[in-house]
Length: 406
Image 1: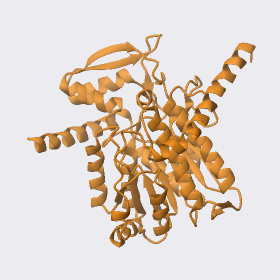
Image 2: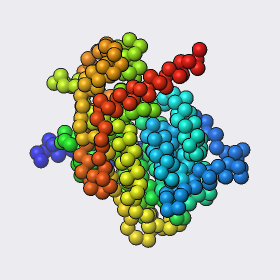
Image 3: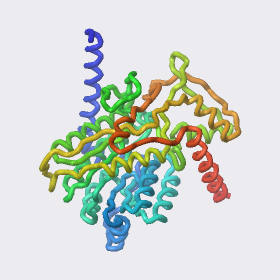
Image 4: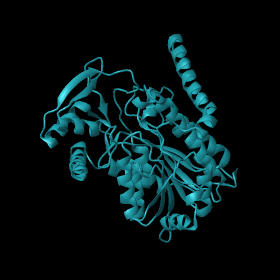
């Protein structure tokens, strides 16, 4: 490595660790003062009643030999799908979500309604609420925690950086604190992100690759989460598995994702922005269908070993893993748009623009061999099939919403 490259690498690493250090310093501040976009928490002494506790216990009840799982971010896109899948196979599930307004909360409420119709109680509360987490662990001996609550989105970090510290750093620490103090300690599976690969140019991205060149604050907070996970595993014996999701899409998805707002704007006749690099190459993503992601989440839960601590003290080494969950087939965004045009039978008004310096990267591409080996992860849905399912859901869901508004 020549002198210039060593200097660049050192500066990059310094910036990354400074981000983590800054996040840690802000931890106490943001625990007591959540960002303005967060919804007011509904859990409190007024509904901390025997009836409330009964609902929690009933939701957490599982068939003999099955798991009892606390799912954070349960009203979110991935969280709602994972919660439903767990309940369907006989696991006990208790959901937790703060229903913030990063995107339309009515979509989250609709997901919540579906879950509660299927026996999943979703509590409105924040992962930074220590008393709530302690109460939940006092009521239920959760075998696992599926931690999916997070402040998502790469570009939003430029508008509201504090929300990422609050959810993705402070929230992780608060949750891990509750887990390490629980007796018995649960096994933890949590959502990291493919964004941690940042400016890596080697493809496909492997879990063994360097991940200290984040291209966005979102990526830096997810990488910080991975380092925090290592710490709690090392000190307290928590069994922790991180999942690096690659561009998840599908029914009940997030409105801030390109495939979602492209669909909306194409149908309305509004122009869409399609970004390309300096070499006129389209941005490409390893689009992964939600059902494939859910299978990966369940595989990680089922192969998670027990934590080895008790009462906050480690007894022996515990499992620590990180997996890529992707589709292994990067697709240019231009092709995504072409597929949507055919499915919607509407021509898109494309504005082709240079990729802005807002944290987005040119491409993502997952190496999934580790997940395949450990729990048989194998995605089966290609983009054409997945977008067809999404479009069918989108047209059905928003036609119902329009009818309700008339």
